[in-house]
Amino acid sequence: DTAVSQTPKYLVTQMGNDKSIKCEQNLGHDTMYWYKQDSKKFLKIMFSYNNKELIINETVPNRFSPKSPDKAHLNLHINSLELGDSAVYFCASSPGQGNPYGYTFGSGTRLTVV
Amino acid sequence: KQEVTQIPAALSVPEGENLVLNCSFTDSAIYNLQWFRQDPGKGLTSLLLIQSSQREQTSGRLNASLDKSSGRSTLYIAASQPGDSATYLCAIHYYGNNRLAFGKGNQVVVIP
Image (cartoon, rainbow over all chains, first blue to last red; front, side):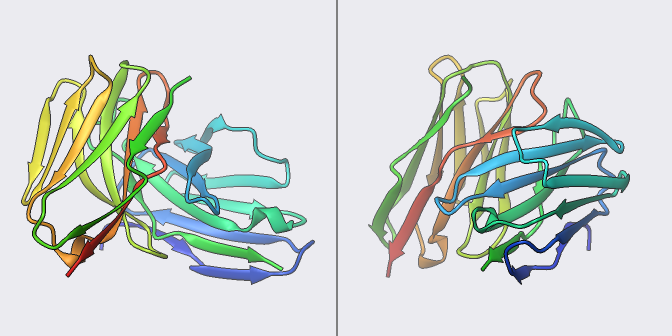
């Protein structure tokens, strides 16, 4: 199936731990994104990569570090997790700037920090 | 600031009624506008994409219109069904800004 796939779907971890979320797309898109959906269900962009190059880095704590080994993958590593990091994290992709086809989202990773 | 507002935040309708969901935006320099559906605990499913040069898009019972001059988009869902119960998100891709700006969503409940 052509899609944006994220793993894991659920992640429960203790404060202070380090965790990673993986994302892969097989749509041949050039651009990938990480969005965060907070407890009020509001979606906001965190990062964007175009062909492995970071192009958007919103006001996100340095504890969050994206990594794109190739244009089909964009992983998110989070150090020293805090309670406030609990949210749903969505990966997305698009053909790139000037995109007439819209964005495709993964199914999300629900992170719970206890 | 490129804000996206969705009204109403939540609504309930009896099955069979038509749904009208509104999205307004403050900057008319948009590349395209995309409507998504999100079921509880699930990801985002793209419903309709309207390019800047288009006035509307249709897919089955869904119709989305775009009026850039007034900064509005409307999603119509005809003859609503209980399966239409979900949150509907309006998202805008602005020119020169390679990201989507989301509204907070319209949470819809269709009562059988």
